[in-house]
Length: 313
Image 1 (cartoon, helix red, strand yellow):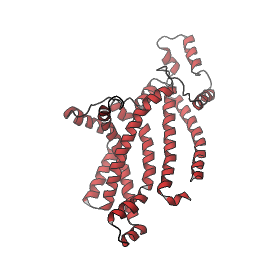
Image 2: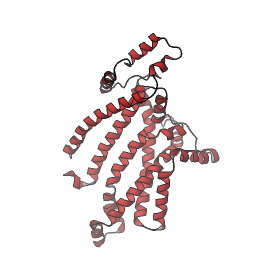
Image 3: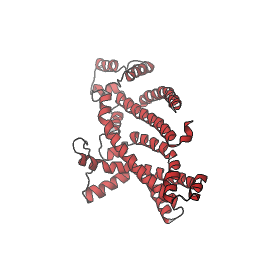
């Protein structure tokens, strides 16, 4: 198992190099000149030249890339052109917000998806099975922004139970923190719950028809032990990988949800950075999100091996 993890870590090096090149190159496709935007109205040529020299914008793109990589390896993601703050400080400030939403969202998705998939697989072609499939399809099909607006109208406007927008740190007021994050977390989790439910159902149906399950039943084991100790353990092996990948998707894909609920996380940060041509922030946020996604893939591989001992050889 140690050698497998070592191989996975070595494979990350070329992946990260290629990824850094893509991230740095794509942001130059954004229209507009950041130096002109920073200079304000009626800037002088000297002011524009000074800004370009400060941020190495007067250098060829390969040289700019080397400056950026050198800083990243030293833990320096650059300075925000808009906020005049280190990009790393902005990420440290915003990342916990999106992490909380992603964790809450994946918990909602896993609970609803796995429970729905197991129940659906235990009663195939029944009313419960059809209902679960309809619900999962609806969760996948309904746009996040539309569901978010409906939740705000119902729970905030009509019932007045939850705040419509905003965010409160859990260190300041835990109750208000949960009140401001429960709706966006549910919105993020529902679509993924539908995906997980369909995969769980298929994996459980396959496991319940396998030889080892028939053998367990022939030995007289209770249905509860057959389902949860034998079938579910093997069925959940691919769900671990799927859950890790979807968690990475939540980290980088909560842009619309954060905008609807006015959550000051990664989504709002990168949207503002794109509109203001704040290249260092765009690069830093995308890089951190991508690294998280790659590490989650590695953790998924490790979890896959831990759950399935046959892969440890």
